[in-house]
Structure formats: C-alpha cells, structure tokens
Image (tube, rainbow, N blue to C red):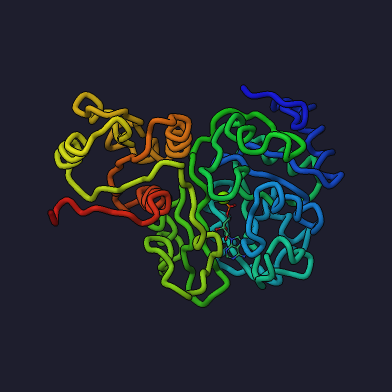
Length: 348
Ligand code: AMP
Ligand code: MG
C-alpha cells in the first residue's frame, strides 16, 4: 500500500469513520468505499467544499455530482428535491440501498456546483455500511463522484485511490475491494418517460420490471453525435481509458484467439477470459470465466489499471461484450475505454 503523509489512510473502524465525518463537516474531502467504486465525498450542501472535488479530480465544471444519502427520509429532511416522483418511491423500495442513482427535479438547497447548473439532482442511497456510517457521522448528504483523476479508470480499492489522489485529498477510508466494481446505474425521472443514462449493477431489465417503459439514452451504447447535448454530461467525456490503446473485437471465441495470436507482437496484450489463457500467446489480463459477467464488472477497472502498470503494453484486445443484463454496463465502459474502436471480425 502506498503511504503518504498528506493523505490520511484510515481503516474502517467506528473511530476512523467518526474522524472522517469531522473532516467532512470542516469542509474537507474524504474518499470512501461504496459497493460500486470508491467515491470522493464532500458536504453536498456546501458549494465551496464541493468545488474542491472538481479541483482534486480535474473534473470538468459542467459534470454534475451524485448526492449520497443514508436514509430515504434524508430527501425530505434536507429538502433535496422540489417533488418526489412516484417512480422514485417505487425504485427506492426495490433497489435502495444499492447501486442505483435516481435523477429528480432539484430544490434550491442544492448548490450550483453539485448540479453543474442543471435543474435536476442525482441521488443515491448506497448499501456499503462504511459509506452509510460516514454519511450519518457527517450529518449531511455527501456529493461524491468516483475518487479517480477524471478520465482514468474508476478506483475499486483504497490503493487505486491513493495512486491518483495522494496529497490531493484529506483522507481515504480503506474498506477493501468494491463488490460491484462499476459505477451506479443512473436513471432520470425528470422527463415524461424514465430514461437510463448510465448502465450499472442494476440492469435495464430490472428497471423495466418495476417501472414498465424505460428508454435507453443514445449515449449509453453509442458516442455522442457531433454537437449533440448530453443528457448526462459525464457521458460525453473520454472515460475509463488506460494509457494503452484498447481495441474491441466483435467475434466468436475462436476468432478472438486466432486474431489476437495472429497480430501479436511484444507490445500487444489481451483483456480476456480465464478459458482463453491457455490458447493465447500474448500477455493476458483476465476478467474471469466467460459466463460470469458480474465478475467481469467487478474486475474491469482493476485489470485496466494493471494494464497501465505494464509499460510494455501498447495495444490491448478485448471482446465486444453483449449488451444483455450487466453486460450493458461492461459494454458502456469498454466502448469508451476503446474510444469506440471496434473491429467486426465477422465482416472480414
Ligand atoms: P461519477 O459519479 O463521476 O461516476 O459520475 C456521475 C454521473 O452522473 C456522470 O455521468 C454525471 O454526468 C451524471 N449526473 C450527475 N448528476 C446528474 C444530473 N443532474 N443530470 C444528469 N446526469 C447527472
Ligand atoms: Mg467517474
């Protein structure tokens, strides 16, 4: 574990969480474990504390933050929204606490910095006990984007956080590796039909089961058309990218192995599955067994960071994931890591 005197590395004991709560009350920044990825938390009701998040991450000022609460009642207690839509109660009942963020019309209690000037606010009730205890100790809702430098893979361990944020933030609480591994599903209820803005651990199929019709925003599976306005500003930025070039292959398992072996050089690698490893003659970074998509999500960012640490890797080949179930979250992250570069081997 990297240690630095500037950023305090805390364990997840009650005393440490209480200490982190005091840092937040005093306007500081604390990275906390959640079930999705590590979040960089500040008092969501204090615009100047929130501004420090943007500075620490190098986050574009037009990209709004998710507000984290520890109980559904916090929405009313802190007057976070102008009205709670019926769909929000249905979603909360079914999926909170958990990896789902719900966008609603905001109230005037939400600082401009949190909503980045939009008239909506994104709210999530995480299930991770450390995150919830920290929110309770701080006594305020916490604005918390992922605790990485903007553009790099999201952190799923305290070590990843320190790698990016050492000396830029007051403290990080070590809660081990995040369970889900990709950021929360984001759905907006601010329009006439609920719309998925970012896929995550809660799938669109699950959302449709309880809400009926749910649209999928164009930017989830495709790049934004030139000049188009992003419903979720975060989707327009290059994201999750390791330094190496990522290329996605649309192919069968055999085609994947043959192609990667045929083009292999000393600087190519495979972001692959366990079953591929014996057949590949390049450096392998495995996401797990072929059929275990939630394990792929759990490991994705850690493997992307490992690729970053291997200076010999210049190009990495991965399969284009299916968009079913949690596959949609993987697809959404990988296609951005690849800058939308896909080779369809079926067409060659
Ligand atoms: P992060 O927490 O950094 O992983 O990203 C939060 C995501 O939620 C980004 O893609 C934001 O653009 C999106 N987001 C947060 N608040 C809103 C909002 N009010 N309306 C639309 N998207 C939002
Ligand atoms: Mg992020």
